[in-house]
Image 1 (cartoon, helix red, strand yellow):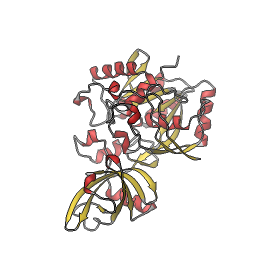
Image 2 (cartoon, one colour):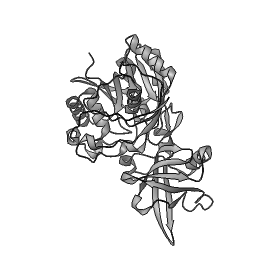
Image 3 (tube, helix red, strand yellow):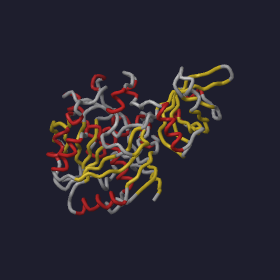
Image 4 (cartoon, helix red, strand yellow):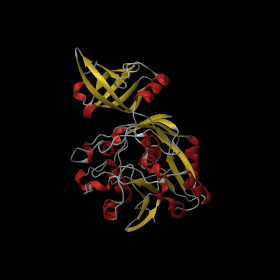
Amino acid sequence: MFVARCLASRFAMRVDLFDFDLPEERIALRPANPRDSARLLTVRGETLHDHVVRDLPDLLRPGDALVFNDTKVIPARLGGIRRRGGAQARIEATLHMREGPDRWRAFLKPAKRVNVGERIHFGHEGESCFLGTLEATVAEKGEGGEALLVFDFSGPVLDEAIAAAGHMPLPPYIAGKRAEDARDEVDYQTVYAREEGAVAAPTAGLHFTPELMRALDAAGIERHFVTLHVGAGTFLPVKVADTDHHKMHSERGEVSAATAAALNAVKARGGRVVSVGTTSLRLLESASQRNGEVEAWSGATDIFITPGYRFRMVDVLMTNFHLPRSTLFMLVSAFSGTDTMKRAYDHAIRNEYRFYSYGDASLLFRDDQP
């Protein structure tokens, strides 16, 4: 079934309610090594406890089910040139959602240097054998630097050309501090990544190792997979004064019939659904029904979760520490309570937890759960 979900909390809220001070040095530029040695803060109401990720099997119960997002990050950052007469301008495009076999929505920088109908030549400067063989036409321009690019190639051929020309799309708060390198090709990918299409990693999943997976299996904790192709819109700041005026960018995903049936069975026997990351949570909530069950689902979602939202499927959320004033901090505030999350983040900052994509993690229990 292919559907689009455009869901939002019905409660408009001031964005400044989700602000907090974050010291620059708390931003992680590299992940913990090994991955499951990252710190893990459990948040259950007013109770906070410090752990490490490899403690996860002891923090959950037999019969619980972890839900992972198995999307795989593609090298979605493309450097190119726009030529106009004798003049040319450097353009960077970050692909964020595929619209068809030959077209992608992308964020252009600087977007003002490109007009609708113009061509962008992507490749590696100085490699004349490649430069110009990946070309796209700017079919549309939208807000915030967004554009629709129609490439000359299509399907698998386009995929191969993007893989050859592109770079790993590190988040701006990392890319602004250091250059991408070979380590990121491994570090910025989950060990279970399978379905190509994301332009940002589902970062809570970066903490998992094969050893931790085996320990979870031994503890009687199920694992299931969904796919949500994370878009670059996840990094966009909220620039409006209240949540009603913020536009979420769509992301495509799928919940299989087998996964839906398995998760409904977990809930029916009293187990908990534990979402690994906000991406898995957003997809499960998009596919959930009013009766609390999840159904097989495929499509695009721009679900925007803020305090006041009633969660239907997810009981526990494992997630990294997020930006101030971000839609993701709003989501975790909806899940565990705004005051609770502000106390948790204050604890994390004072105790030198590492923030953002390569940072440490939290394990959140819904504030309406016993």
